[in-house]
Length: 190
Image (cartoon, rainbow, N blue to C red):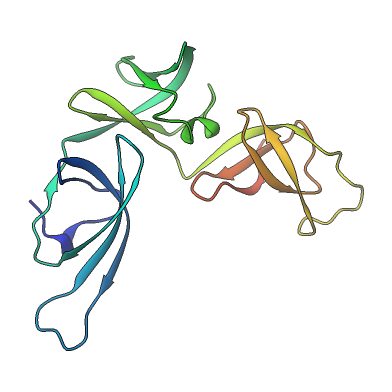
């Protein structure tokens, strides 16, 4: 069991009967206080997706969760469930629409680097790569002479996600999107 001071971003811990993934850590040293640092952690519940903020002393012992990440590809939709296929042993993982409603907007059959989060043999969520490539399905026509940094316009992507893109992007372009910030990063490599 690691101390709070040894826990890193992306670590899964068990706390208050829930499995939580550490998304952010802020270390602070209170003035005039004997003892160590405090670690304020932004945690996400892997089952519900809810945010939890907790503060731990550096000496607090945290229990690591029995969690595995399996690299998988999106395969097909089965009613209200999305089916992902394990890249190594082809195990199908069924995830409900509610459990992955935000993440699925970044995923199609071609998306690489998606991991299914598995706890006690049951899939509970998705871990996305930092960026994905998707095709612009619908946007206003590009304006001739528009600079790359000028104004932006909404664009609907092949998965249904709508983001702001520069004016020079047109329908059919393949673009890279930052999955954490839902932001345009640039045109994809051909």
